[in-house]
Image 1 (cartoon, rainbow, N blue to C red):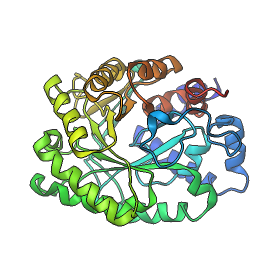
Image 2: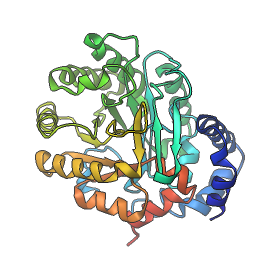
Image 3: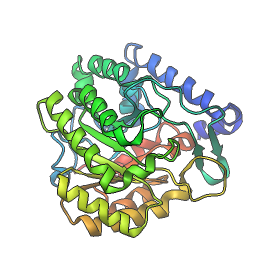
Image 4: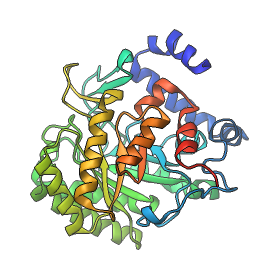
Length: 349
């Protein structure tokens, strides 16, 4: 209630991207204050991901992960693009944290303004354009994170993309570079070919274009990590049924671990960019249902899109998702949100 009062009286009056940048800096600085992470975990995570009793649910349906997950609900890519606040986000109750989207070289992204709140819809609209500090900077932060026992305990994924200036025909090179630089430090990799904010990127969802990208990521990840790194493809909610079937065939043919369903949608009339948040929930859940039918029981589906309440998260699970992610509702619901969702999805006992 305190956060919601703060949001409506103060935060919503601040430019969305400015608020985002300030929040990430605050969380990064707070992570280094002695005792702060433990206090935050005690107040908000309340057992999710803690050392004592952390592994609270059977792991058979996510056997593709090398390490047990402390919960079924994690942070989607887009909030912490450069891995600045992973420890604080974990302490707030996210069972796993996905950073990125990251590209081989740093890039500024699209012109501002490029992020909008749609408060009445509990949604966000963005046309960020993969603004990030590049794979080398993220790799350095992840290496530092993994230098401590607390940092090593956090389940971290990296969402990877191509630079805007890279021609589509050589996109596998960019994805391979990111995989090589990051695979050693992460628990899984996500191939992002579904953002609507990089020109032409969604055409890479066609399996003839996507297969060489997958092969490049698999090869480079294995070389860098010297172990099997789970790999997922993040797909758009706007794909036709035939395309979803093709993606499922690619998952089986290449042996990757599954899909994240879904990215933002362009099926809206709010302006340029992709829409995320509550309006996306029903469509994302439909995609999860369809992909589960095409994939069968083995591959992992991470359901993402419009999850706001514990009921939303449970319905995503009921539709066939092994794991669930969220981001947009975090802006509206506040710091208690991830722990609340996780405790609902992964009760003790």
